[in-house]
Image (cartoon, rainbow, N blue to C red; front, side, top):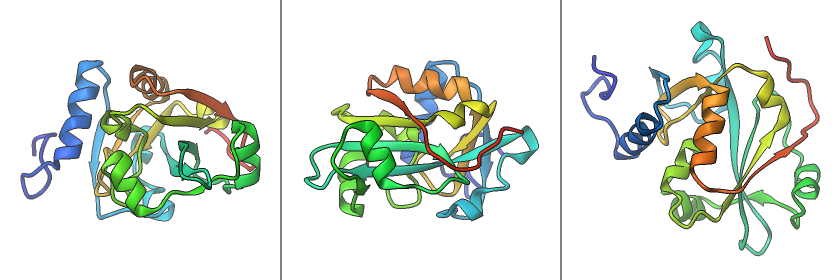
Length: 180
């Protein structure tokens, strides 16, 4: 099977955009097809063969829906809005609606991914990264569809994020996340 096709021989348009962006940056990744994975529990074993850990990706907004954030955090940590909001200097953050997710990133729930920043033409989504993610050498993320995951080196994901021109900051999220 070609790395650009799924079992039915079709790659989603969103994934093609992501694949092309990674190729332009010469970022290597390993592609995994799987059943739709909308929860971290369904993702936890994907990428184990290369030592990759899935990260939790949350699309957040302030109460007025005027500021948007993509939070990348360790999958085993709880999201505490007050802690993250304070570190980002934002009014209390909450999950953005499905409509806003579709409007801002052309994504459906369950497919939130830092790779979706290729679809953020306004470049107004701020990225916040849990510092503990940097402890992992390899990370797994969806390429904007919930039936595929890409495993790549964490440093390459960071390089991708910097190439997107979105603001990137780091936060400390309390919890128990250890690199293996």
